[in-house]
Image 1: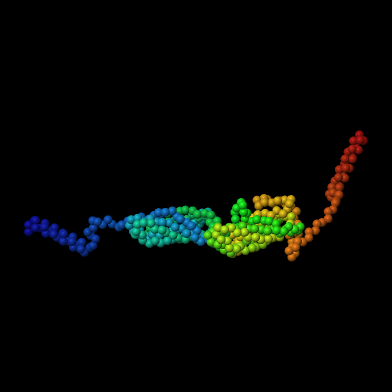
Image 2 (image 1 turned 60 degrees about the horizontal axis):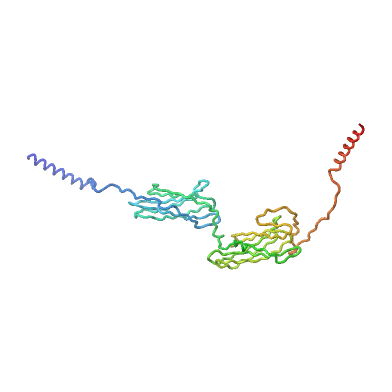
Length: 335
């Protein structure tokens, strides 16, 4: 066998062995187009966190939080979003909610929502964290405060006392003026600021004597239906002792829940006058005027005035001083 034949046979043998190995062991011959494992797609927060109260009770409120994720590129596996409410003052975690989105394959934005129930007081820091296959890839935060100002569902109503310079929330006039008791006519002005007729409401009016804060009269009246955008007046009468000044407090109730208040004054004392923003002063008060028997005032008895010319505790002192002065004068004259 010549040399050329031997080299040719060797080359053929090597090729045959290579083909045999490639057929038996897959992957030995690399695909020139194979670039290895594909990198995961990009996932991040595309929009800021939106927060709005969803449910409000007496102690807690449920916040509906929403954000949008942006996905670009290859498949992003096992994507989750964690929402967390942290107390703004103490730094304690109040509640946590996690939303699982699974694998993201399509390019675009995905809305993500969750409900966080927190105490209805103070403020919170709402944190948003995005994970891709347990790896943190993006995060954001925002704050919310003043939750105690939210009105619970049971106390919501579109009706309230009228706030106008022309029409006061509570008007007071004299219906009957007597020597001992005066009957006041009270008119509470209510406005429906909503889009639906008013529900069952009632108004309680309390009159307190200005200087003592004693309750002199009280009455409660039902409120009829008030159409949307309309104003109605609820009338009541209360009899109180004459010659006193009173604070008139009106309370609007919805199903035993106080939903609005208003205040005015009634000046029946001709010597003194009060206003809503005025401080009180100490004056003589006869409590008997506010006691009643079958609705009639009790007579007030005043002690007879007496005159006492003596000065207890000063007589002995004055006598001693007089003796000392007389002794000094006599001594000077003897000289």
